[in-house]
Length: 508
Image: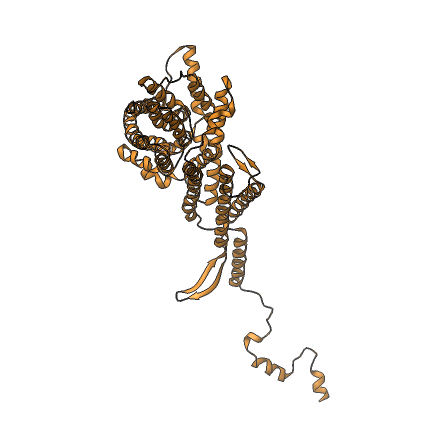
């Protein structure tokens, strides 16, 4: 016994222990230290590679099963959910920013505003909401941009984001025009105090009047630039079927596109280069630029509410005639000329100097520079947002100073005109000629015409109702510079003047 026990070493298991170990299931046995096969090594390496790929964003992110339905497990992609949240956050902060700027211009959200001027109101809450909106947009944009490399397909969000942004801008524009329209209807008058030009007289009055005009339309100009930047970036990819239509159909599409957009002629002309770069037809461009100030819904409502019936009908009918008839004839003639750019011909130092000046002016509206070399196809929402804001900034950099300079020139020309002498044909012709070059904000033709109507000068009043909103010298220069077709713009101006004279002659 002792000898048998003595032969069992310390590491030798007892027979009973060996039998118990043999009865254990294989999964309960302690692992053995044995070398792994090549297949095992490859499996471990593959798992590690997949984990590193998910971490570095080279694979589709992990998914989470949250339940089951009759078709199988319900799976949610966590990265896509977070990405959509950031895109939604950007839209919400953009809406907050636009609402704040709208209230700064119109003042309708709060009862009391410590600062109130002709051009803006302000309360400390504006600073808080504006800062929150800008910071929130920046944070959401950067977060979405970081997540995008981990997602396999983000192009499906681009179209929806485009139209949501466009809808926000259009709603902002309607509210911008709707608030003062309701106030004007309630008061029975349209406020045009900006025409006083801060009370400045003499040679400085054109400068003051141009500055007063831009301060009065700063919000509409901002919206026009943002819509123009969006248009330049991607919108015509979805509207190209309509924008590129020529002939009378293109004219009708341009007029219909202008109906919901109450821009003045200067602001609508800001958008024309963006459409032209995407291949819009001449018919569509001219009809849209003229139709936005002539036929927008809010202007028609105000004309019916504030003007005497004969003048209101004249304003609407003449607006249809100029927007559809005149622009169609001008586009047809101009396309027959087939001169996409103006060439300043001639020899000698004077001609060479004019050519250099004309070339320098046209170079301001170089579409490729405004687009900034952005790709024609935008694959991700961050690319869309970046291209939109980049293009809008460059458009503002070029067009706002140009708009101010030509507004000064137009005000100077209008001031130099001799005064009208009464309700006669020379006065109508003078009003039609001067009003075609003068720039006004949307609806300002209504109070100006009302003053003449109350004084018994009906003919010039009717002429101004037609020519003032249709076109202006800044609009002519913006269109001519961006499209390079000054002869077409000159012909359009002549058509507007003739329409104004005809409308005024009807009231003599």
